[in-house]
Image 1 (cartoon, each protein chain N blue to C red):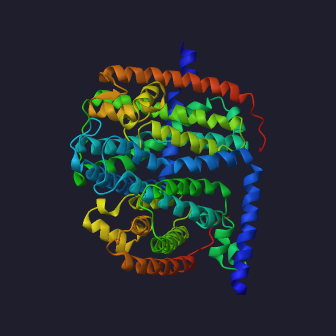
Image 2: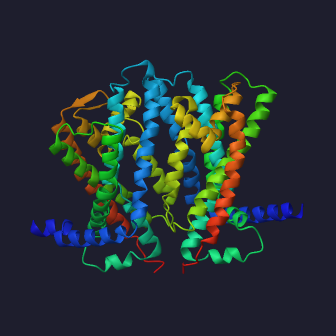
Image 3: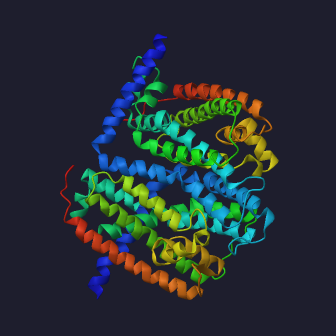
Length: 275
Length: 263
């Protein structure tokens, strides 16, 4: 059992790689600080759009104007916590042949990439999440207080893992395709639309909402946002917060298995061309 | 005249090379074409979903909003196809230290960077926009010849605004080396252009009309096509030219600060 756990989790590796990535990206602070402009301006556009749309109505698909603004505010903040580019990184390593160096190391590349994400997002937490949260809270006066801190944090962590596993699985396609930019962009759009980043999923047609319930994408962003606001509903299915978080946990495990399966298929195709 | 012919030759060579590069990875090219097509349909999709839920922008029907978004997509698609790639090109060359090679070529650096950035996969965006545009135009009262003439003129101004943005962005990259998030800043600012100007506060309407002419990207061309005479149209047209002039000045001023610090 201990061996199995150590195969998937290595505390020392996590700390070392996360610290190195944190320092590496701290050199590109201005790159990350762009979010201080992008996040609030994006929110401002949403503010105008939804204020205009709510002029003749008080609720839309069960959302009031304030709830809708909180939805977009929390979506923006959650994205700062879970964002990653494991897909780009992995396909780049495969394409250039630099992936060979990882095969020679006694560590799982997936865990290495996850540790990198932890370091990168820790930096993002201070440089993106905290300042933008304060802007939303004090400038836009958004009541960004979670309905239940424990479930919100747990759902956020699961969303973090789900985002990583989905992206990493997309990156694995690099074993089959030389250039994956097109496929990656396709999946990323698909992922964001069906994760509820652009519009709450309850705006989709009923049949599609039911399909979306069974896909992994809603567990990346939509579920953490709904858990934050304390109620969950999709496709006519209303669930208590602990239940939806438990389902989110199950989906993370399933996605981990999918990623492992794809990995085992893909690694057999790696030739190291480009080294 | 000779300068114009040289430019045409430069662009046609750039297009040939771009096409050959695209076709070297045909599978990826086809997917990217499809992705560009799909990704730009995102905002119309959101608009459709919102209007289907019963909500609407006051005074704007679904087709009228789609008209704005279709024009926005066409302008961006055209820009991406023919000149917007210069931002990426210059940014990458400055980062790699290859920009010096551009400076010793016997032609305009801006045009050279634009011509060599041609990529046909960006035409997906143009086609998507054209599709939305045709759909929306067929569902509004038929525009007369004057409306069409005004529309084409304003569409040219819309392209000039995008060209100005590409100069501001690429000029910034001489100093802010390798920052790919400049696109995110651009996309965020221009998001205001995807919706009717009238939904924004008065201060923002003035900002988008007289300072950064984002309203010209799609709102003004769409408004004249549906027969409106929107406030601030003529002044905004002049502002677009000033914006272009300022962008060119900015670009050359930033070029002076290029330090050739790359590889």
